[in-house]
Amino acid sequence: MDANSRLTDRPIEEVLPDSRLMEVLRSGKPQFDKDVWLQDRNLIVNRLPLVQDNKITGVVSSFRRKDELDAVSKRLSQIQQYADTLRSQSHEYSNKLHTIAGLIQIGATDEALALIGRETQSHQALIQLMVEAVPDPILAGCLLGKYNRAKELG
Image 1: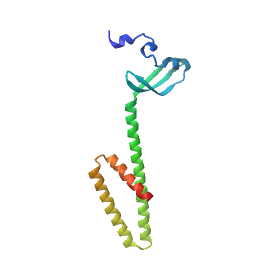
Image 2: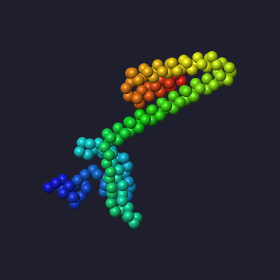
Image 3: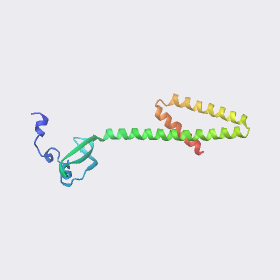
């Protein structure tokens, strides 16, 4: 007898005693993102009533492994941090461009050129350090953004 035939035509409470599908069937209220343990696995479960002609005719349940969901969430958090880093860098360079434009407008071209030279040299040295010391480009970008943010805040 295979595993599927042992589960066929059996009440859900026997197969999954804590499934709560019958609760959704009786109440008609969906359950979202419930944390459950099943066979030593941590899962996130959604349970949705099936409605046909204004009557609840069944329940559908979906399962996602929590560790996979956590990994996606962590990656999304890293991407958000990377976007924040880019925003900070953009803000810093915008400020520098305004400073250079101001220097040029008041005729202080030597000072503007000196500022451009210092910034270029300093920035290239920092980028070179990051490339050599941090192999992960997202981590390097985050560190560079944190550096720029700290510099921005003095």
